[in-house]
Length: 357
Image (cartoon, rainbow, N blue to C red; front, top):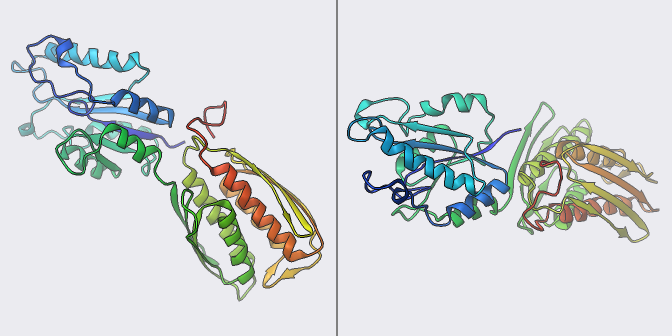
């Protein structure tokens, strides 16, 4: 599983810049405001921490090693006492004129770590108080966040938590094959902005029902080989939509996880949904007609099976009724309502005893 990693500078970011290396170690370590509760919240959200620091001339006569070791050990002890530990600590002791490859913003310090771990680039970030930290982020290919700096772009630690953990959950998924070209964009925390175009009118209407009743925004466009039949368009749309939803859900902290429901005139659809990360699908129902508009009714079950597999969800659907249109619409609306409950943020905990979903 890809790691969400924060590469964090030390001086000026975690602790205030040491002003005098001749004072006692205790006087050298002053935590930046709100850093402890902020890191604890991001730890709870699944983030890992790596410290990356330039310490100019460490180990020289002007900056003896012992002048660094005592306050650094105290810093680590302070964080550890609050349950915050760093997976790795990388320190460059060289001066700018040394031209070494390990000094930020160069990336040599992190080469082995990056090679040994799969990093979630879209969620990870470099956090620091200098532009060298922002340049390091650019070179790694992740977000850079300024903190505790005299810059309009700088954030406080609570603002960083809000940005990384509680901003809108969005994702874009694209699928291009010999049969279809699809782009699906979702925002799980904004509703009402729905545009769907697959070339199958009734299918478009059903996808709109999922988004409307799911309470999320959906923009989906598919160009498929409808001159052959609707199979590839429906199947690949389900795969693309499921992948977008799965990516937008992220680590799933705070979600409801489960969902169910609803009647549609004389028809009734029962839906049970678990965003467990494990795909499982059950379908029970028989449609009186073979087609509704240009959509073959046999593709309804196939759509939801493909959606469950790409979303990584257990999805059970049972539908009864007399009117095929109503039965299919009940299925799509019910799945939308189940998604609304399951994706809704109801807290900050992970709804699983396993520690992952």
